[in-house]
Image (tube, helix red, strand yellow):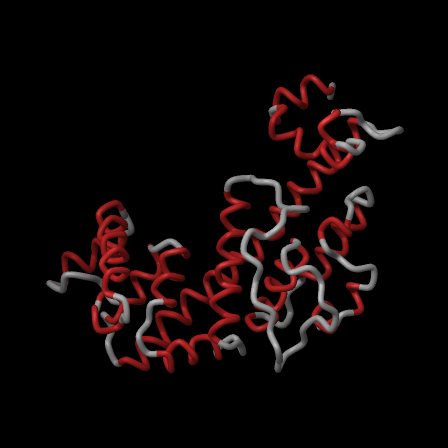
Length: 270
């Protein structure tokens, strides 16, 4: 396929981000480095596509597990199936009212059969938590978790994934932002996190021994792998990442924050 056809399908503005690494310094001059090829930049674009696809599929499993943990643990500990829409659950009532408005909007717009069934069968103003977690965006669930008044409850939810509250809250934010980037087909391979994730001090499960740049995408991959290991110890993420990097040797792993010996890290060997 010709370069013109490729750019017509992709769009020059989107593709220009993959040309940037091949520009000489200063970048503003717009002069490419010697031996730069369009095909190499195109391969980098396809690498990013496949990376997004891999990451999105792995996050899907994490998302389901977090939704389940949030609904089940909080319901059990509070003894209240409607805790999610109960004002006493939250410490900041202004934030709760904003969350409640989003819940109302999601309920008004949903066509889920289980919500319709609940409305026909019960007179409660809101469905129970295990129904609401299925229709609310992950960002809203993150706000719900961070606004819980009972810090012991927040600790129990974080401990389900063998994490402290600050680390769980921070990593959940990173997962949500990464998921959103994948949904919008945004470039991810060499993007920096606008909000640096919290680094754990102690870990009871395999983690990385080195300290990679927390703003680089490799740290996001480590967060995803950690959650997957807590959910499904037989996950194939390390295998998939290894094969993807091998298939695209032109991808600058240093720009991703990946060290030369990343495969020797305890996290990636488990």
